[in-house]
Image 1 (tube, rainbow, N blue to C red):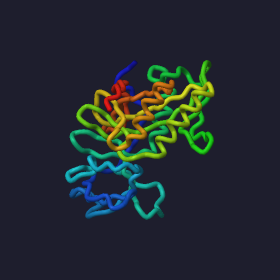
Image 2: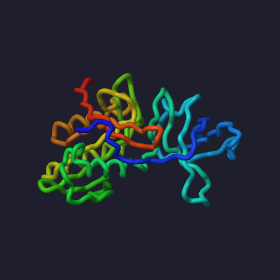
Image 3: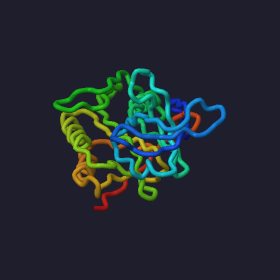
Image 4: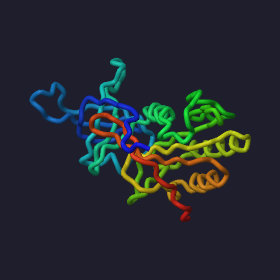
Length: 245
């Protein structure tokens, strides 16, 4: 498996200074001073991440932002990533789908082999799961979770209580009973060596996470890197911690 394999490219236009998270989906930032810069002062950007991100959106953090495609939109910029603690961390969850599709199509990284069919956002009962795909051998349902929370060298999810994530685990267990192959991809965007569910923040999810593993739901924590040149790279697979609570 090739380390630092390029999976996807996400371009950005500017690096600016973070000032404040105004609402769940809006941040305030300040343009950097430059003689050649036509933008100056402060503005607002759309944040496509519902997580708390309190450990990332802090004083001194920088944001990688891109001009919005829709010129009529209230916020003219989109947040792509945050630069803090010497890392560039992707915090725009809209790109998780495309990164995951790239993983599916890379047989050196994907655990499923060559896909014959990929369908995103597939409905099952009252839920919408991220992917359904088929290989020569299997029919597979996959849910994708982005991870930006780290405690020491341990990557953790969720960053806030998630009823939706819990529901998805239960759906995957039911699908496993029906004979499908089921899996969770955990896309980790911060330096870490092992993954564990965050049981202090969400005990129900964490208990169900290990139950799902025991019942055959496959868990794949993948360490990724978003580089300053806009490339998203696969670094390595990391292990799941044994249950410690």
